[in-house]
Length: 90
Image 1 (tube, rainbow, N blue to C red):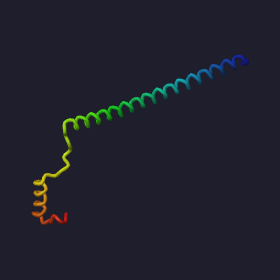
Image 2 (cartoon, rainbow, N blue to C red; image 1 turned 90 degrees about the horizontal axis):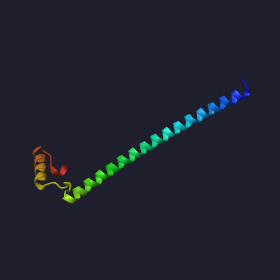
Image 3 (cartoon, helix red, strand yellow; image 1 turned 30 degrees about the vertical axis):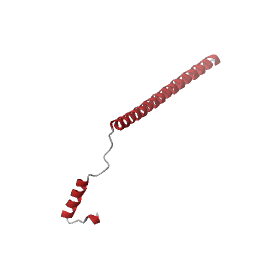
């Protein structure tokens, strides 16, 4: 082969390799950006839903039931005693 042909082949190979590397890098960057955007959107949606639910529950005066009604407690202990269990041992 002539030296000029060898130089042209080397230059073409280098250009093709550089183009392939650039395309792969661009694809990876696009995929990473899409994944980050999707994660951010999911987090924002979850935060907004939680804030809206908390705000609506606070606005309506709703509160979780954290107390036991006295009648229910008495019935519970009566059932325990009927089964032979003393309330003191619970």
